[in-house]
Image (cartoon, rainbow, N blue to C red):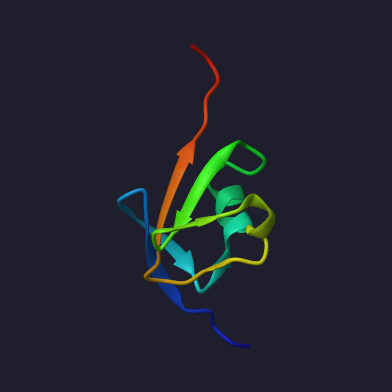
Length: 72
């Protein structure tokens, strides 16, 4: 059985542990933001919501997530 590599990403400026590469969709699920209106940048590039499942976040990546809130 192969062991997955543990690593760290930078999530909104703070270290966040990951086990190997993870899809952006899975990362959002893990931090409780699945299905929520968010804007995501991966290594300073915007990612469209339609691409979350296919976009891999590798250890060492920088991820910025901004949640959108309605109101006024």
